[in-house]
Image 1 (tube, rainbow, N blue to C red):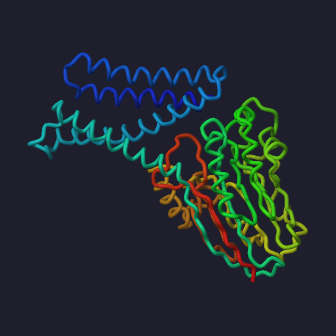
Image 2 (cartoon, one colour; image 1 turned 135 degrees about the vertical axis):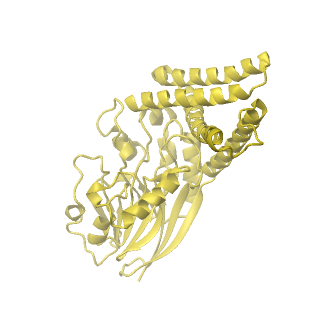
Image 3 (tube, rainbow, N blue to C red; image 1 turned 90 degrees about the horizontal axis):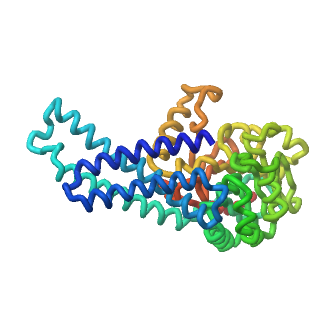
Length: 394
């Protein structure tokens, strides 16, 4: 609750700054100022309605309010950044006179920059929304130097679906269609399948979509941090919904031998208080056969490598989801990989590999940027993706 309250306070201040910047550039015409003010008043009303009355609203109303609220949140972040540049330059110009022939205080210049920023941000967000609605299929060929009765395996991997109020049944249906179009031999869902609460899943009968997932060697899933977010629900209610209603085989610190040919290991998320060590989970595993590990958060890749995993699959990061988070993640990864920062000293958002493929030892590592997302439905500088691994066992 405190996190959401803090977010609203921040948005009020950002909105006020954008409002003030635009107001200073408006012509002195009453109807323009009334229209301009009404936009911000309406948005604040929507914010407070969504925050204080969510438990009394219908699903459709909650979906729409959440979409408007999260979209406005991203819009204000980008607009504030651009407008601050103008005010910073204006401040520096008073000291150094960089633009002696250009009056940064003039209303027409301020309004022109405001309109430019508005058009630019709107265009970027429109493209980001397009990227969200058009997931990319990332396909890779992988060779595992182990024998198996199965020589070739087509694995479809999806992480971070975040099914709920924002990623509603229509969007999940699109995801399921896209997954099944890949003609998988095996489907793996690596955590954060559910967004925040289980109520939205029951209201939409979301299980009818997940039950469409079929593959010759099965459909398996591991938990993510969102499966452990408790919003007045019974313990593990989201996880039970996934297994009992959605028909997924949940691997919770569990190993399973599939068709006497390969192992799948599903680790509990870091938020699970009873999470086991990987060597304990893999006791009894015949490592002459291929081993695939699902582990939602890619914090300690060496654990899967040292345990003898041939393929290790992760999600969680969303690759930052939208700019500049993706750049921050990449830079923090470069810093972390220098070895200057010890594993136990690094920040939670620092990853050895925040996104993509890496061969670490004998382990093929892939960190997906996720199929769905949390919050604003925009992919700016990142992609929504389904990962297809064409695995050949030698």
